[in-house]
Image (cartoon, rainbow, N blue to C red):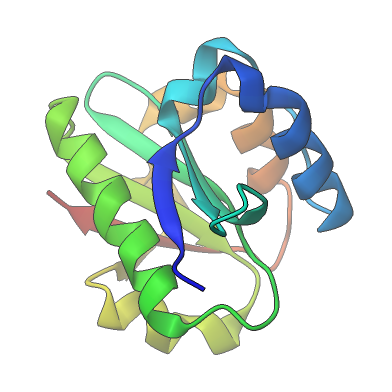
Length: 148
């Protein structure tokens, strides 16, 4: 089955909320206004098989809500990231950031071009976000940066 990646729209809010909740991810800050910064990976029948979102600031974005259903190909995950990078460039951003508490994921993110940074190197604007403040309070979080 051919997967499709597209930007989320207003009608996707409930389904995306449910998808992230099933994956045991927080939905703080997931609003109708922020949906323009979410990508969905769907099967041909329109069911969500993956997501990648971004909390957007003027020059920066913090990636969030990366979820893929079991059985999705690595190339589809790479495609999600590639499309998110294109979206950030379209919006005139300078850098993308992400946080993870899964050290096993570091080689994947580094392959994508992300570089590990210290927490203090994060943009100060990020403290305005409830979701990001929550991420900053997770002790074992690692932070990475991708320059656009």
